[in-house]
Image 1 (cartoon, rainbow, N blue to C red):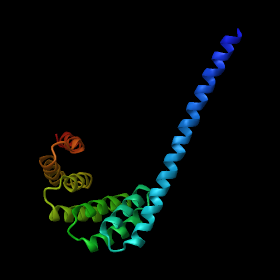
Image 2 (image 1 turned 90 degrees about the vertical axis):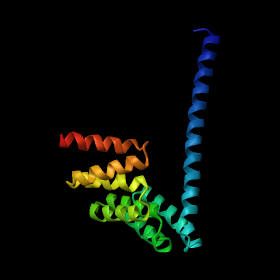
Image 3 (image 1 turned 180 degrees about the vertical axis):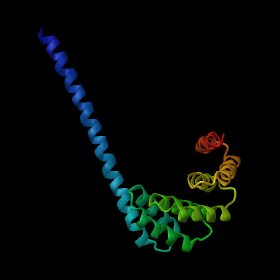
Image 4 (image 1 turned 90 degrees about the horizontal axis):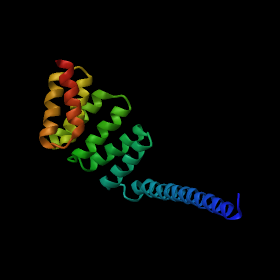
Length: 168
């Protein structure tokens, strides 16, 4: 192999290694920034104990980490401060589902619907749960309601079609 071919091959290997180093650096920067954000969110409930939003955001990070039971406590505190927030109740229901407590989750979704009847997400989540717990007629109604309020909710169409196929 000629010297110029060797130089080109070495240069291309060098450029490729720089790309890998750059990607690793970017990933580590991202991880460090995410840790900074998580640390800030960890401090927010102590800094603003009466802020339902900071309690809610912290609960969402806990859910993302799989700490559902701990997240529920923060969501319940947020709900105590702002009891008319349907979104908090939907997330509470989601955390309860992840802890394998479907009856409690269904109740949280129903409460969200009572607070905001035109909010599609709790109708969808409740519809899924009703279908899984053997209540296809009620599930059908909830899924159709979800689609009525949010026609772009693709997952609701999927659940609805699965439900109709089972009942056909």
